[in-house]
Image (cartoon, rainbow, N blue to C red; front, side):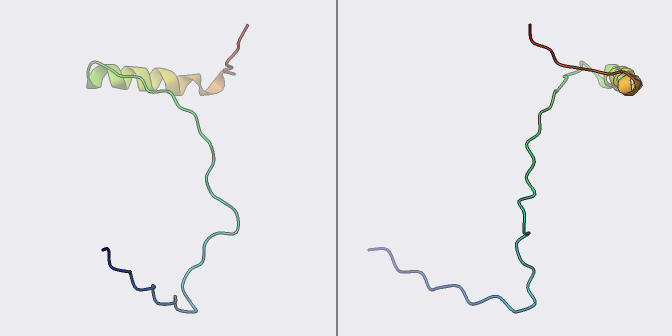
Length: 60
């Protein structure tokens, strides 16, 4: 028969509390697998250059 666990002691009064609002934010990402470090660098620099572009996902 399993033993009953003892209740946890109370937290100190000055212990940090849970945040008022959840901090979780749904995110989406894209992972690109490169064959080597040189390709990774080229791809990263190309993607960084796109910051000035307006990029959209469209479904038709």
